[in-house]
Length: 379
Image (cartoon, rainbow, N blue to C red):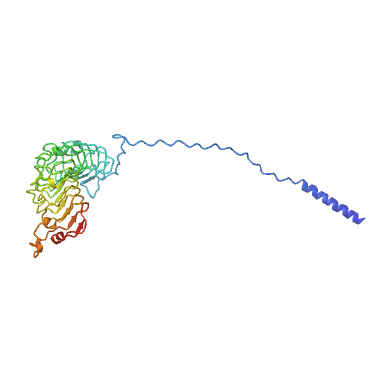
């Protein structure tokens, strides 16, 4: 009887537990969101390129400087308390020259967008000594400007767009740089009364023989350096002052040098005639026998022989010509026997360049015997 009751109790407990488990909520399966269909990406059209600035309107804006202790300092410029006589207006995107303070001696206006120079800016600038206008867009300089700056010594206007040498230049000028313009004309009298000018740089312009008259350089009594390289000259310029120390005529089309061209040049030390059309026919044999000459450059011409030169010459450039042989006895400035016992008579040539010709080693012995001071010879 007891066994039956126990069995019945166990069976009831088992059924009761089963009912409890069957009533527990079943875990819900995670619901999956319906997938969203992505639209294919369409590339955006490229932004149009910004147009280049159209001259002369769309220049970068002028760069204004900080307030200055000088009330007359233009906002486009810098006025340093350490250099009260200097006005620094370079690299400021300036299009028009501001009014120059009367205290200014040194004026820096290079690397801007200036197109012309008028007298208005210089109404109070009578003390200006130095003006740098390089690398602008200048095509005109009003001659009245120079009436306002009568004490000017240095004028730099290279890398601009001038078509002629400015008129009315002050007689006080000592250096005038006009290289890399478009100059085709030197007005009559442009250099009149400029007896103080020591440097005239007309490199890389478009000057021809007809633009250089016999009297163009007549008044330049103190001129020491004349640079007419990279023009379109076909002959040596006339009327060059005999005060010259340096004469540069590279990259022209010169094919002839008059026999007595350098007569009277007692100070001439440097002559450059590289990249011309010189041949033996157009170069008198003794034309470069100048006692003051130290450096002679005749590279990239059509010479077939070495010209005679003075014993004081130290550097000789004859590379890239048509030279096939060298006779040391012929080109030696002195007789070899004359200076065997006197070193002061030995020619002073130190550097000789002959590469690019039709020569091959060895160097002739008579060349070595004559030019004992040679430090370098290039064949």
